[in-house]
Image (cartoon, one colour):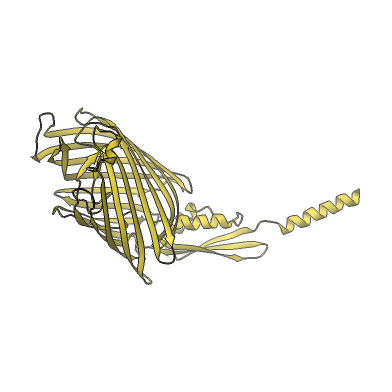
Length: 420
C-alpha cells in the first residue's frame, strides 16, 4: 500500500513538472518613438509574471493595431532559462498630426467643404485633440478632445464644442424652403471598455438650435424664426471584432446610437432617436476587400419639416446632393469592392466600385413609405483611394455616384478616410 502511494506521489510530481505552464519573464517593446511605453504597458493585458498565452498575445496585437498611432504590430517570444519566455512587441508607428479635408458637390452646383487638424497621439498616450472649419454656405467650427484611456485601460472621457451653421432645406406639403440653421453646443461623454470587443459611451450635451428663414415657400403654421434651447442624453454601444492589416479589414462591427432630445419649444418638440450601423468586411484573395454597411434608424414620428434623418452626399448616398430630403426613419445600405492596384512600402492605390441605396419614412407617415418610389434612391458609382500607409487615416478618396431611380442626380464626393 505504501509503495503504491509513493508511486502515485512520484508520478504526480513528475507530471506536474513537465506540464508546468510557461511563464513570461519580461515584456519589451521595439519601434516606439512617440508612443509612451508606460501607456502601452497599461493598455495591454500581457504582463511579466503571467502565463504565456497565445490567445492573449494575439488579442493584445489587435488592440494595438486599433490605436490611431499604430500602423502595424506583431509579437515574438524567446525562451529563457527555467521554462520562462521574453515577449517582444514590435510596433510600426503612424504619423498622427493630420490635416484633413472633406469636399462635396453635385449636379445642382452646391458646394461645401470642411478642413481641420487633429493630433491622434497627444502626449504619447493616444489622446485625440482636434478642430475644424467648415464652409457650407455659412461658416462653422468645432473643437474636440477624446481620451479613451485617460483614467485606466478601460475608462476615458470625451469633450467637444461645436458651432455649426448651414443652409438647410425644410420640406412640407410637397414644397420646401431654405433656412439658415445654426447649432451651438457643448458635449461631455464618459467612455468605458467592457471587454476586448465591447465598449459603451454615455453622456449629455446642452445646445441651442436656431432657424432663420431665407427663401422659398411659406406657410402660416411653419415659423420663419426659431431659437430653441435643448438638451440631449446619449448612449453609444459598440461591438467590434475586426482584424486589421494595413488597408485590409476583415470582420464585423455594430454601433448603436440612442438619444433623447429635450426641448423648450413645441415647434421643435422633444423626441427619441436611435440608429444602428452594422458593418461587415471580407478580405478577398490578396488584393481585394469587400465592405458593407447597413444603417437602420428610427425616430419619434412627428409631422414636422425639421425631421432628424437626412439624405446627404457626405453621410449616406454618394452623388445624391447635399441634404435633399428628410425623414423620421431610415434604411440605408452601402456596399463596395475595394481592389488594390498599387501597393508599395508606404503608398497604396485602390480602385472602388460601389452601390449606395436607401429609403425613408416621411414625417408623420408610416412604414409603407419605405416602398414608395418617391423615397427610394439607388446610386451606383466608382472611385479611387490614395493611401499613405504610415500616416493615420491618410486616405484621400474621390467617388462619383449616378442615380438610377426616379429624379436622379449625379455628383462627385471628395473626402479623407474611407466612406465607412
